[in-house]
Amino acid sequence: MRVFAAVLLGISLAASPLLARNAGETGKEDTPVVASASALPDKPTAIKPEVSAIESEMQDLRSLVEEQKAELEAQRAALKAQQMKMTALEEKLGVTPSVSVTAPVTASSAIPVGGPIATAAASRAATPANPAAAASSPQAAEEKPGPLYFKIGAAEFYPLGFMDLTNVFRTTTVGTGIGTGFNALPFSNTVLGKATEDRFSAQNSRLGLRTQAKFGAATVTGYLEADFLGFLPPNGFDTSNSDSLRLRLFWVNYRRGKFEMLGGESWSLMTPNRNGLSALPGDLFYSQDVDTNYQLGLTWARQAGIRFIVHPDTHFSIGLGIENPQQTCPSGVVLPPGVSANNGSQCDTNSGNITGSGAATNTGNVANLHPDVILKAAYDGGTASHHVHFDVAGLFRSFKAVNLIASLPNNNLTSANTITDTIHGGGIAGTANVELVKNFRFIGTAFYSSGGGRYIASTAGPDFIVRPDGNLSGVKSGSGIGGFEYQVNPKTIMYAYYSGAYFGRNVDSVTTTPNATGSGASGTCTVVNHYGYGFGPGTSVLNPGASGTCPAAQAGSTANANRYMYEPTFGVHYMMWRNPAYGDLRLMTQFSYASRAPWFVSPPTAAVNLPTAHMFMAYINLRYDIP
Image 1 (cartoon, rainbow, N blue to C red):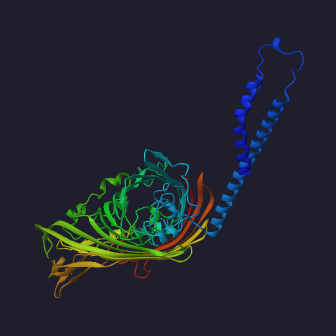
Image 2: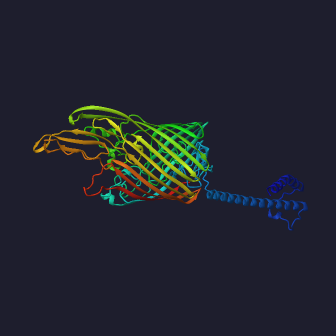
């Protein structure tokens, strides 16, 4: 039909000069011009036969063109219907295409597997270095720009984000908002351990912008992301609930050929990856949890730094990161007399999340010695339906403290001297993310360190202790996660994890021999006090032949000196509605049990068993993703 229409149009164009010539010869136009009413003939003027034939032919051609136009519109509608059928078939088959870093961004056609749903919009531009990884990535084939995509000059801009409404119920009252403080689960013999909590919040809603521009052979990408979990005044949750904007990520990445450099506030290089060593949220593993503190035992941080990455080939990536340090000794660490007064400002006591009037005591700016250094390598391989990712990271840290120490062992604080000590610490981490069968992934992470406790986030893990002589000693720690993620269909994803974290004991003791006190007292006592992390109460006894009363010994570690914590979790996410032009609506759930066991807990009475600290919690989250 298209060929036939083209022929007719060609004949029409060829005939136009002839028609014009004929009109000139007859001295008449195709449409007579009426000069005035008096010029109208009393009777109809006879029309020449050849003019009537030409007008009839023109009318036929116009009819054919109109018919062809209607047929083209019908074909266009049929083509659109075929495209919609193809999209539906892809969804039915579980195809989940991804957008290239250089391509405009729109929403993916299915719930991402291999990228946290919480950042699906942010991760649509991720391109793994390995083609097999790209094929199995949550976002695989290029799509047209989304409605919010725009350009200014040569730069492309992709607004991203979502609106969250979160409800969380806990069987004990943690009091940390929608993010769980795993180190502070209350004990069953306390008021908070017997009280439940339930809260709604929109704080996890997120705003962001990704930019990209080409400069010759180089690609420059900028990324900004913020949520509303920032500082609140003391009455913030009472009436106004005016949640404050908080910076999450703000970095710029430069890539040219096999070389890549990133600087700014980003996820730490210690965070497990899903694809390569990319800093895009969709290429990282921090679980599918709704909990804003993610899964217990996850090693992560978001902090300022700079990193350099080399891609030797399409499978391997090697990176070096230099990141902001923060030497940490939280409340579970008991400092000895003589150092506690002058060491607090040199060590983060985990007060960084304090809000209200207590924020004045924030010890965020501690005296760090040098940045944390991280070396990491990743391998991506497999096939389109069996993507595999492995990475391993090494961490190097140093700690320094200056303490004014009194003479020991008699603990006489009148004769002070200065002790300066520096120690080194570090750790190693590994990740395996393996697609065992199509859309079913096994995920395992492991971390072990001496002095790396702060990277086991949301657990208040210590980096080191201060010994009574003013010297430092690192605390050993470790954590791990094992689980799976299964994309049942393009709308549904199921996940389950089991995780744990461990912090070792590190204790030093001081023995003194004070005189016995009391009426008729004589002789001396032997008093042993312990300091550090994870110890029981000290001892105080009369020496042989002595009489009277001895000073009380130091109590045991605080109940925040945790030995082991664990959390099993499972959940389901379901995409209720999606339209590429308007975004999508998701229902997200999480169900968890969390427990912690400190090194020492004082029982209420000798006849009562030790209390336990555990909790069930359930999250239900409704999320609207912008297109």
